[in-house]
Amino acid sequence: MTDRSAVPPGALVTGGARGIGHAIVVALARRGDRVVLTDVDEAAALQAAEGLRAQSLDVRARGLDVTDVEAVRAAVAEADAEDPLGTVVNNAGIGWSAPLLDVTPERFDALMAVNLRAVFFTLQAAAAAMVPRGAGSVVNLASTSGFTASTTPMVPYDTSKGAVRMLTTAAARELAPTGVRVNAVAPGTVDTALTRSLATDPGALERLTARRIPLGRLAEPGEIAEAVAYLSSPSASYVTGHVLVVDGGWLT
Ligand SMILES: NC(=O)c1ccc[n+]([C@@H]2O[C@H](COP(=O)([O-])OP(=O)(O)OC[C@H]3O[C@@H](n4cnc5c(N)ncnc54)[C@H](O)[C@@H]3O)[C@@H](O)[C@H]2O)c1
Image (cartoon, rainbow, N blue to C red; front, side, top):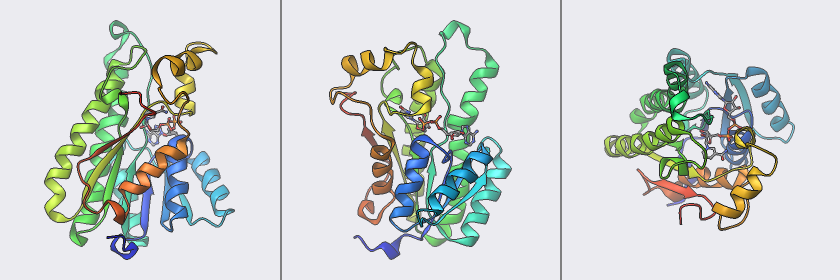
């Protein structure tokens, strides 16, 4: 079943101003979606959307902090009113490395607010829009860190991504009878600002690549975006509750 008309044309991506989120916006817009690019950095979101409109892509921007549940609900409802949402992507995420003994409750809560709580409430808002139509899908960004511990100490991050896997499974199970699908993509190590912020020294990424990535290179953001585009397309009409690992062999 590859009937494009089976998926409403609207799409909303969180954390879309840069990195993987930006590549997802591009991939969805190139296939013909009308995309709302949201980001906590509103100026960056506006600039990114302007750049994509200059390439004739149908992208509009909106500032959105995903930790603000009321703002998430309003953004999803407004986007859905303009173009019925067929695709919502929970991409916004934060990560840092710190020894377990140094993690404060405040930092732990701040990370979970973005990486887990916001994923749940954005999914909930998307489902509220999609369930009445019985069509659409949500794609969450998990990580190989949700399967196996990160190379540097990142217990809260790894835990949040493990939870996103289960959130995906449980939500897919509950929503399946409505026709709404829920899946996740689990990237390995992608060449983004987040990854570079975690590198301990200039040679760290090269050593990591040699040691842990069988394909011998970092992923490009566009390679993750292709997986998101597939899962949210009619080609994946029978796929729900799946976590698609895109990791260059990291987990092998
Ligand atoms: N980079 C990797 O190697 C990698 C690997 C596995 C999973 N992931 C996941 O992919 C997603 C994107 O990662 P990335 O590397 O592109 O990160 P990035 O830091 O390059 O970009 C993240 C974007 O999210 C935005 N953001 C941060 N907090 C936000 C908030 N509260 N509300 C809205 N937007 C917010 C940022 O402004 C930024 O534009 C994250 O969920 C990350 O955990 C990344």
